[in-house]
Image 1 (cartoon, helix red, strand yellow):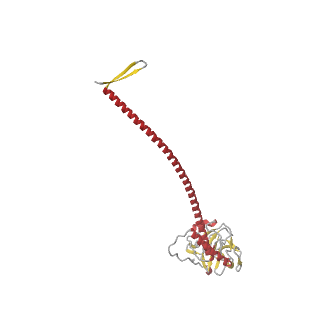
Image 2 (cartoon, one colour):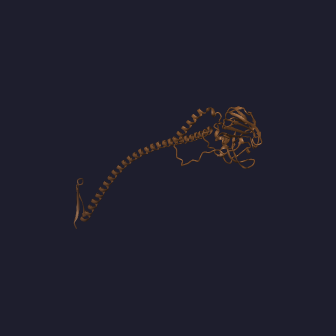
Image 3 (tube, one colour):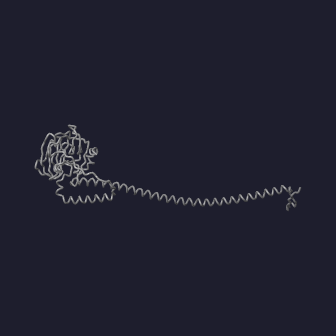
Length: 336
């Protein structure tokens, strides 16, 4: 069998050494070593390649991290801007709501002023009131009449913007302002204030249908009852002339004042008078004191306003009080 021998010489010991292998074993060993070298080279190459790729990935990751940080920073800035805009929108919404509320109040006042000036009538009947005074009308001058009302609205309502509402109210109030200038003398004779001094008063019965506290029968209460403490001062709501004072079983002590050719006022259940028939009075002059005379279940004044001898809701003439505030609030809320 052929063999393969390997010889080498050692200069130090000056001798030869050798190894002898079988040929097949030598070839097998050589092939194995070659394969091992090839595998080592391959894995070394792959390792270097992986290291390069890993370095590239790390570099790419750093760049992505930087980009992500920049994007997060931009997102935070956008969120801050959005938050600021939301705050601005919220403030605008609050201002808008406040503006709408103010417009509503102005509209109510404009409506009340128009009622007061007699530019139109829009009385509303109030149902199911509490009450302190109960009586049937006995004098033709004090007859009950149903209030006038506007004709029903025809057609579909349309939406109106705040700017349009403002312009409409502005134009309306400008017309009213011109009317006031032209009618200054006439306005002194139109009742425009609550005929009671002080804040410790309340609306005990409104204008409209109710059950009479003495007979329990349904009747139209063509006035408002203002309750308060005994001897609360009563004042004239406008310039005028006292046309009647007296006393009867129903009204107790009462006063009637003619303010102009069409408007008069009446006051019932008084404790006492401070005026006499034929006397001229000015707005806010004391005319008497609140009491509980006649058919009455408590201290109050029965306040009635007539236009052309027809009863109308006195509340539409009251410009110096808000019926939804002060001592009138609790009773007024029950009526709404």
